[in-house]
Amino acid sequence: MTTETAAADSFDVGAFLTQSVPMVRTLNLEYVETTPERAVLRLPDQADFHNHVGGPHAGAMFTLAESASGAIVIAAFGDQLHRAVPLAVRSEIDFKKLAMGEVTATAVLGRPIADVLAELDAGERPEFPVQVSIRRADGAVTGEMSIIWTLRPNG
Image 1 (cartoon, rainbow, N blue to C red):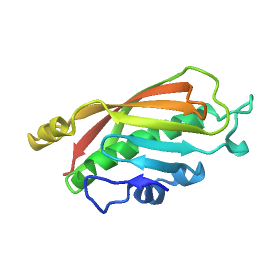
Image 2 (image 1 turned 180 degrees about the horizontal axis):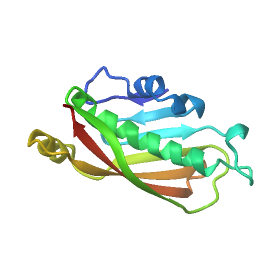
Image 3 (image 1 turned 60 degrees about the horizontal axis):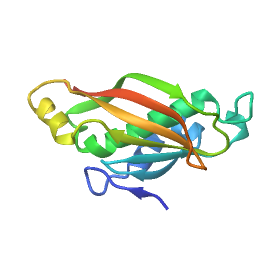
């Protein structure tokens, strides 16, 4: 069972992103938790997405982590889509340990939501970091991603 909430109470982040981002469906990503405080996504162990040592391919793990960051951005700022588009600006990923089997990505915002919205209200294009950790089923951190997002005002 997933726990999915967004800034708008009835907004289903996982369903929205599964529908609007084809790569989510391609990798069969599972939304475990999506709140403005934390997003957790799971990449099931799938042979079609393995690398040369039998674990998840680096590209699949990058997509998992980026998708987790997008999920928290939508959970935190989904009620702002009428006036701004969230866009990834840049990212960096560090692979720490060999990943095998199922992996999960946990994303957290690096700035308070209110601060980001204050910049948007002031007519600025705010940037904010999202930190993501990728873990194996045994809890070991296999990778870490830092991704900078922006809310680009419409119009």
